[in-house]
Image (cartoon, rainbow, N blue to C red; front, side, top):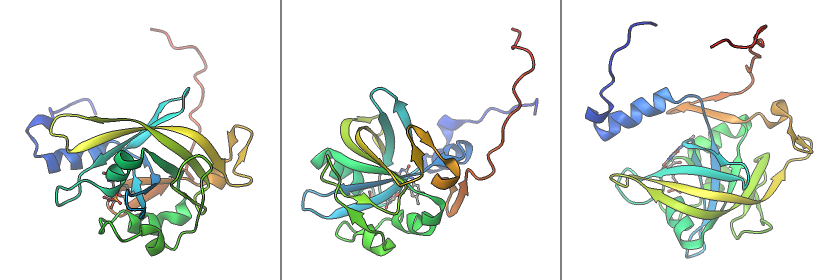
Length: 208
Ligand SMILES: Cc1cc2nc3c(=O)[nH]c(=O)nc-3n(C[C@H](O)[C@H](O)[C@H](O)COP(=O)(O)O)c2cc1C
């Protein structure tokens, strides 16, 4: 690959830019986020435009776009209203339900019931935790940052209490095989970290 063409990102339509970015930034981790609406309806939705933004304090950034009809997603609305969520790391066994929870549905319908997940109370936030997810971060909202046409909102949340399923975490060490975290490729395509490999260490330090 030593010949390159310019990709006219700025000339693409919003939809094509989205497709190009999502197909380039791969694989993406998946966060499953629970929130509660102003009226008390429990909501869950997966987000793959997300990452760790800060370690101390532990902060995640989740990019929430608009619904197909241009309205705000329930997760964003609920975060604005209540300022808290639980961010879960889903595993591969949850893929089918995660995909189901990622379909836009009306605000009064709970994706949790559709997916058949079970919830328990969180310790420090009002949103509950999905027990099927092996790691759960109870989070409070720090910021909502919007850019340009405001078609996506970067929700910045800080973990204030963390839970891990028995055996998955020893001290600070995560057993990757037991975690079996779910990754997203795009559309209905998912991946896992099961084919992780080790890159051999360089024999000599890099020379500039
Ligand atoms: C695996 C997966 C990852 C997703 N990642 C994102 C994302 O990063 N940002 C986003 O806005 N929507 C994403 N979606 C779509 C939302 O999950 C979907 O719009 C969902 O219905 C929003 O729910 P809500 O209205 O309850 O917040 C993703 C869907 C799936 C299945």
